[in-house]
Length: 418
Image (cartoon, rainbow, N blue to C red; front, side, top):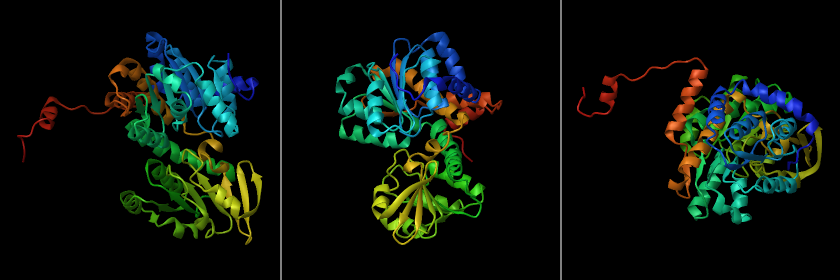
């Protein structure tokens, strides 16, 4: 088997952790049981560029048990769990190409390796896989029936491709599913981001001035978790509606230039670049800590900080100190990469259960319906979204009401009023 992982001897540890995560992924488990019996993905080759974590491993095994031939690589150089990558290879027979801390050259070499079996479906978290196909491996396009995308940043890139007329096959935006962004982004990112910061620094959040840049679903989650730990949360935004929402949720709202001079911990989660840049570094207090929870390491302008610094040293694992000429020190966590995966374990399995259930069912949908789809970005079909929610409620032993015949009639008519 072709693979590239850090150490196969880590496989047993990885398998134990994968099985631990599986206990909190009952929806994906139900899908896996059906896939194993029906084999709806037989003959399908899937290339997956995702964070190589215990939850991703359970998705890969589900796809494999559905009959697919799966290859996996990392979607971020610091997000790989090396024991999981080893377990995928040795324990589950799934080729994996991922090493935590890999350089950019190795990162892209791994993407190339993941495409080597000429996939029918691409599965992305950030759109690097589809970008590679469109720029360097156009020869693969005739065999690809579709793809899926996991995260906001990737969806932004894909919609840009569609607008430019270069998207070569249909892609389902798993990120747009309600059972993904409303739960994974808010509860998953919220908890795991704070987890990453605390593991890296062991700071006390209570009483700390925490600046959260971006108040989308992820920003909402980060802000409420920081507030729950006693932080004084400040939100920066460019969208007036989201800024108004943050204000009414009880947070202070101000421009980054103003927040830069009073913040102690800064967390970016916008999906855009240079959110914190030179003029902000110039205003920051001594000891300011900066972390990013957006997909790519572009939200904090680290090259600008490096150009301002007289020295850099690593003071803790994944904590880099930048010394400025005036004596101030600024700290960057996880090299400005995804803090929740660089410094912690990513989202809890119970929320990834819904996200990856959407992934698995979207691949099944593509395999059945790709001939009717155009070269554009599609939302997850509503029936899949509702089924994932239904299964999750069932797994949590929660029942809900159903509409009566009279209620259905009322909602579908216009004649009955006051």
